Length: 84
Length: 179
Image (cartoon, rainbow over the protein chains, first blue to last red):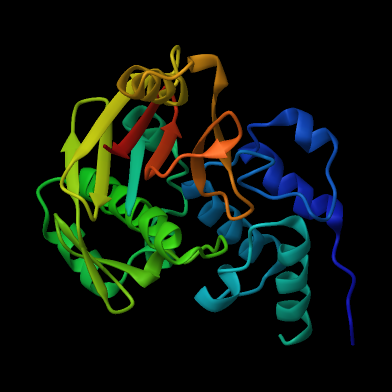
């Protein structure tokens, strides 16, 4: 069964690490964490950990590789929730 | 090919410590964690290894024109100056001060490295250096990143055949160029 993920919850996880507030205000699916939001690369790993906690999932290294945009993060989260 | 990375230590100290162990496990291999555990200053070792990984990542992605990816574990620090990625080993050079850690790796021995406070960014400094060296009009020099986020220098919209790498963190930024 496919469960919808709460985008607002995902946004609340990412927001504390965002450095480019202007692009944050114009967020789209394609928004890139490093290019657009200027998130520190060490913080990308923190985001992955916060997502694991919030959605009660485990993200392996292979899945983590793609978590550089909103869209790809949603894909990974959905995949992990549905395969729990 | 070339890559560099700078870590602002004050910023690094402020990074979330509540999930530090899990962060370390996502970033470092077992071998690296052993080296960190055995070091005199695990905090500095963590950030030295991180900066080595980032520098190596930039060089590797520049060399093979690769799309961005989040895979810190695939870069494994073997020593304080050697890192392995896939079938390659890169030599790295690290400078540690009270305020920052800077690492770089380069296929060429001739490099110019600069570290600046962000009041004058490394981008500006690098352009000034190139303008002076090649007698170019500074206002017509630009640094643009391609779709894979790899930076290049352009003069009057024509790409210059120069290897460059940029980094910024906290209040510092850095550049390296093969000249």
